[in-house]
Length: 430
Ligand code: IMP
Image 1 (cartoon, rainbow, N blue to C red):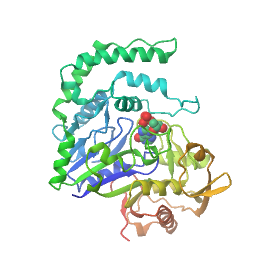
Image 2: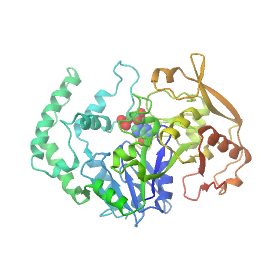
Image 3: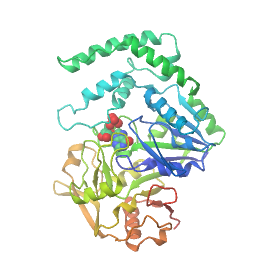
Image 4: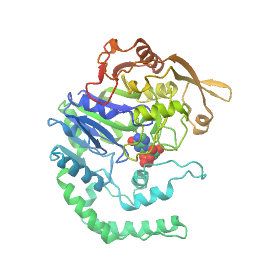
């Protein structure tokens, strides 16, 4: 079974949606397997731009079965909002979307907890979450006793469970508010609301693990759509400035139930530069006119939160680490056009930490904070390249830049993108 996955190799927002959309043509099933409505993907199709969070972008192709698998955390209100938005755009959402009964559900208390707990234990820099209740929902999943899975909403005892959890959460929230408690959450209101969500979602809710394992047995072509980027992985990213799920390659199997050996191709997505949203170190960040140039030209503002993204030079130390971590076969270099008109470009080829040159990505955040990038400077190109359609037709300096990234990351580049449209994509064959 040719299972392919698309994984972001930086801190998210690598324009994965566009590559997923292109690859969808060759696949029958598209699976979202981790994260939640903290992710945002943009798909440009039929001359229109769509922004989705939870629903796989395969929804725009009639031959594709979309799956939201067990590793995803679901805010039913946002999911139904997306279904309604697509219906209003005449994009049908029916049997073509199935959702795992094992997926965990986000409740109003998770939003409250996200707001109250977005600090590091030492009171230092905040994680800067997307405030979508993602971390608190995953925390309850691991804690088990206060968790609700989608399938629980259709079982006897759902109302009792909501009442018990709400009472417990009200106690916790009052303690967290430290003397200025917010209005307690109303269990009856929450139950009524979620019972309505459950009813509307019911026709989509199935055992997606069984569905996907059958798909593997019958050799169907599956595309796994990663959310966020590998540097935000809860285990292998820049902890604690990470998201709460496994956003690197290993997450495919955990979040979908499909054994890793059936994923036969991994496409790693990189921007031609670096961006990061939220807190945590970003060694190559440029808080100057170069950073602003990238932000303006790349429209680097969050799809979900609209926050300005932190921008900087390409970090080959980080990208080499994540390409290896996620088992990448081939790279897609996105947004190359954004770098036009800069007289020279810098690529971070190593870090200097306490006077020592390091090329392995540090495992501890304190070391990453002290990392001073060692840059290689290469010439930039003047010409706009958004109209270029063949790799050979790019300015020599742009091609040399891509070749150098490939060499440093240690993987071949299969795709170069110079704009959001499908046509603004070059396939590199050599
Ligand atoms: P959370 O996932 O909302 O808990 O946020 C944790 C960290 O991950 C924050 O730094 C967020 O900015 C970041 N993050 C979460 N989702 C995305 C994404 O889709 N793109 C970029 N950063 C993200």
